[in-house]
Length: 231
Image 1 (tube, rainbow, N blue to C red):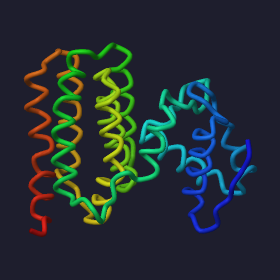
Image 2 (image 1 turned 60 degrees about the vertical axis):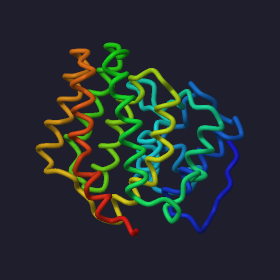
Image 3 (image 1 turned 120 degrees about the vertical axis):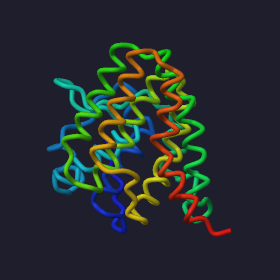
Image 4 (image 1 turned 45 degrees about the vertical axis):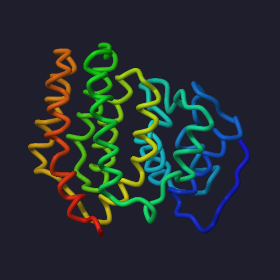
């Protein structure tokens, strides 16, 4: 693997940029395993905590997947999808929070109801794994990323890759607004309860209940985003 260092970036961003470049230039392909944390740390001259943080970020966006006994694997993303995600097709200074949240709700309604119809037992296992990681996370900033990773796992369970990809494209910008406003829509306990309800709706194939759950779960986010609009 060749390395292109960029000194103006944080260590985590440098790792993300490096892996992105490797994927874009087809040095690594879907299904390939990335080098170990130790090897990446030695190659990029950054600490292993930065490597782990970068890999967690990439996993949140669905670019890589950590598999037991297999390491970190590049997922089935095309080069164009990677470019759309990391070249920031949408810009925070161009789109307001409410517009992004509105689109998120529209996409999630379809993605989640399709997940209730199309999900497999393997999909449910992945969603449950994402929820466990969210429940175990104590860092508020990382909890936001784990929350979006949970919703991404459900979107992937729809088996409509376009829906899942569109949600991924807007996720980085929505997360930036979350951090900007230090936004937390509902109490932590309620979030976990509602997330468990998502899984229950998937298992029950309850599409109608899933639609209502999405609207209820994101209602506070919609109202908060609307209050930040500058008309």
